[in-house]
Image (cartoon, rainbow, N blue to C red; front, side):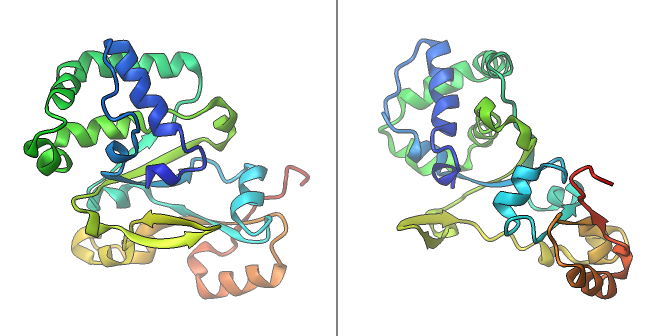
Length: 230
């Protein structure tokens, strides 16, 4: 759920910037409701970012899976590359204001109507606008080179929930394994289609590499992130 991203203000930043550019007030005061019609998965374009290894791979002892981006085309997902600088943010907002200005005004005018609450999650324009707003990210995270996988939420019942650090986090299970049919993949095996490569962390135990190279011979030998020393 966008409300539970590392920077909880990310969606709010984009939405309020768009409204400011359009000269409109935010009738909801909080953007949590608006952002809850999409689920966000966070990926990276690079396996060579040490902070990512430390933060998301058991202090660099784990591994990273390179996923074929084309697999998401069969999941009704949208892929969006994040932008980080103020100039990039301004460019995105300017384009959205031109493209969606009348539509955003329509949303605000009908915010109390039954049609708004019943139909907003089914409106393709709203979903695509949300996808674009979720591209905006603070410059402090620029080194992450993030690509976001964004999927529409059709009903509150789509969410599952988990608890971390006392916070109830809504999340969506995206079953990539369910795509493992030859008709979807043009005759390729599921494993060959989904995975592009496997990278081992700089502190990954050598025996783990042996196990994975044995079990998944297509990736043998696995690629090793060496911090640039070799």
